[in-house]
Length: 343
Image 1: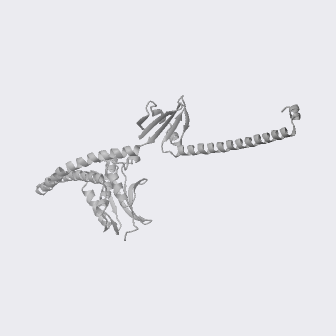
Image 2 (image 1 turned 135 degrees about the vertical axis):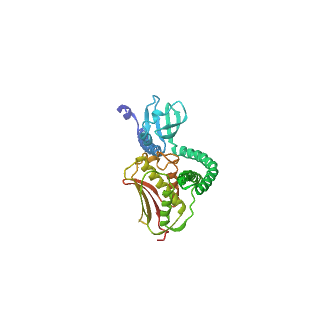
Image 3 (image 1 turned 180 degrees about the horizontal axis):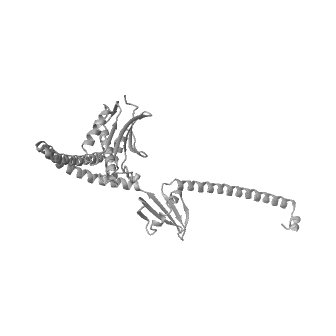
């Protein structure tokens, strides 16, 4: 302010001017504090938005008007090539990328493009399984009756055949038994697993294994070593027998595919940390695709329909156990909890 003007003011005018300056300073402080609070709120809100974006299960990109990425979350960073496969011409789309399925949604806002890609592989898998299961169940029902009749006729033919022809009929019966097993497994898979527990000795499972081996058609001279504990357990014997049957047949097929010199299958039972472990070792071909091992209707084997291990996993889960595999030495195993068992 000009010094001459200030000198020309009387006492009242100077007091008024002083109060006005004090008020202006106070308002400046208020505005400064409000700006500080507003800035803190903005930073807090931005941090919250960033957390929400990172929390999203979907991959998210935000593009500027030149279609350059200005923001992306961690899910998007995990799939850097996914964005290149997305068509920006559609607002909604589904695409398959790297063996997975994604639901894509695109929004244009203020010269920016927001893109989200959600992994829907599990939903697609469940839809596919439901569809395939429905078809499989229908076919299984259609096949079941004629196969039953053929099995009965084969048994009659076996009893009436001459000794020199009995081995031919026996091979026919084994082939029919295999079809029956596939039909029964398919129906069990589509209906769902329900266990009926009873007390029995594990040695009875050894008998189930021996019966399964004798009824399976294979050409290799395989050395079988079945080591079972002598103890009582409470479980569904029929379903556990089916699991062991599937694991044994899986091992036999692996051996025949590998054509090893000294083929061997060994089954062991042991107790560890209050769990019963049953392992099926074999020296056949290695597991080709670990991601497909327990996938229903998918198999890398020359034989089989891809249901055996998937169904076995459901059976063991129904017993509150675990079905898995190890690569060195190669074996499939399953566990049964012994907390309510008696030895």
